[in-house]
Amino acid sequence: MTSNLATYLHEGQFVFNVATGEGATDQGPEGPEMDAWLEGENSHTALADTGLSLALAGLLTPAELSAEAGANVIVNAAIDVSATSIANNHNIELDAASADDAVLVADLVQFAYANNTALAYVNKQTLSNYSNLGRLDNPVTSISATAAGNISNITVGSVSVEVDPGTGGGEGGGDQ
Image 1 (tube, rainbow, N blue to C red):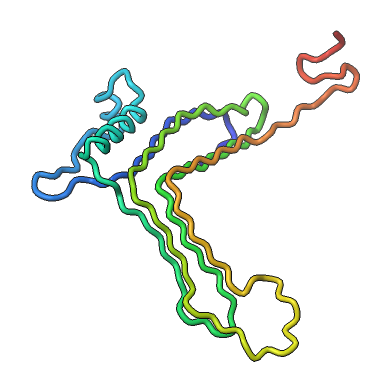
Image 2 (cartoon, rainbow, N blue to C red):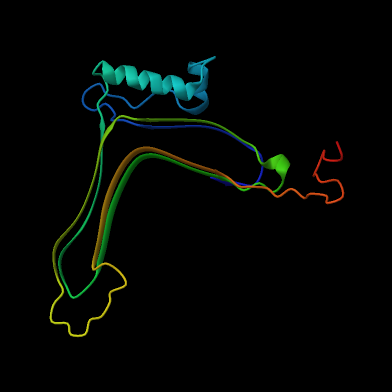
């Protein structure tokens, strides 16, 4: 989410396995219905607390998250392989247009009950029969694997305030 105005954000992100089999249902309160169902409570926090209680009681099973990337046989070529698996991710940027808008109030809840894996691999790579190869600027092989549960990245940009050289201050400044 990107904004240039003062922002209020109430968001919940949840990852867990859903019930399957006979009698299973995916019906339940959502959105405004969830708020009414949990009247007087922070619905996202209450849902995370409920998820934790259900998981501890063995009534909730973890989601299975995975990412895989690879290459098999590479001859005379550089390889860059990466795999990333993320359960929940907030990326919020507030680039305020004015000092009055440099306000972010956020109530963020993330709940992940999951087995999360990432795998990146290169099986074979051949680099041979080169003469006068010289210096390589990049690695011949670059590989990475990342598995993350909950990530929040929040940026509130700075706002410049003009300073009056005659008074030594900006708004509200002056001789003391």
